[in-house]
Image (cartoon, rainbow, N blue to C red; front, top):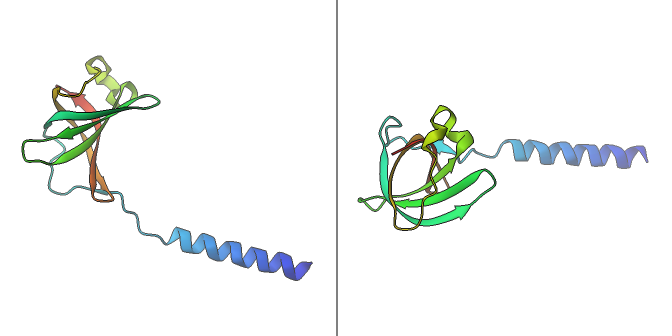
Length: 110
């Protein structure tokens, strides 16, 4: 019984160590200044728990997934608006990349 417990413990610790050593794929996009607005046309909207994610297509054919919610807007919560497919919008916030896709946590909306 004691040997079984040790074996399970060693295997569990080994799995934890392997999982902890996985690279972090969430990284900031270095080519975009977070002080600049990203302007694009809404191509898709997916509703979420606190807001929604809008897929934006810029003039340079870059795609951004913009997470828009009142909590993320903080002191700019009055700017919250529900976007629809076809709307043109400018957003600003933290930009990061995951799996080759660009995401922006929206802090300001124009």
